[in-house]
Length: 286
Image (cartoon, rainbow, N blue to C red; front, side, top):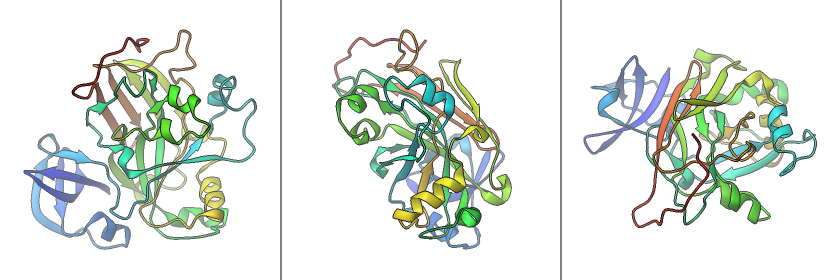
């Protein structure tokens, strides 16, 4: 089942996506997480006529993100971050305010950063609460999977001792387009993921290449934090990010970023400059 949250004619719905249509259901996303049946409301709409919103529960506290979780990404970024492959996960947090829809324009204000970068990641949606979850039962806590583009303001990330500000520019982290439930994709999923900028391939990998797999992440994070239904884990990005390229490449107004994970779908976001923002010259991503 593909579960989406969408806006149609001014109203917000939860729905089930089938082909190029979405069928509104009576249950909310939160209720579906609690195993409510997706009973139809009687409203079926072409996907082309709706706005897809971030597919997160109203109870979602944010996104728990794992950094430097692919070996090749560690190697390419060693001069800036970790000199060796991490022995424990690097975990940071994105607030719900950072999230954007699957096809929303991204308001990357050059007054905030001239070094906005891309990061394709598999998102894991928690469906069952737990603390101190054993690795062998981690899959029991997974509701489904989605796509995250962990847009990062690299200059802010470097300037501040913590990563939080560079990872939390408001409305700049697209997620979606929907959540594919675990019964469809299995556990753990083995999926190809990729990202293009203006049609040029920048990232390509497979989730099997993670340093800390989904079970590791759920088990380790839940030692410290009770995971709740609706929480999202962003499981790390592979190599190919912009700041490690020579010369570095960053996103600029008009760029189109497509973030794809097989069996889930794709995000497609155009970089926009907020009204009133002053354009600043940037290294092109083309």
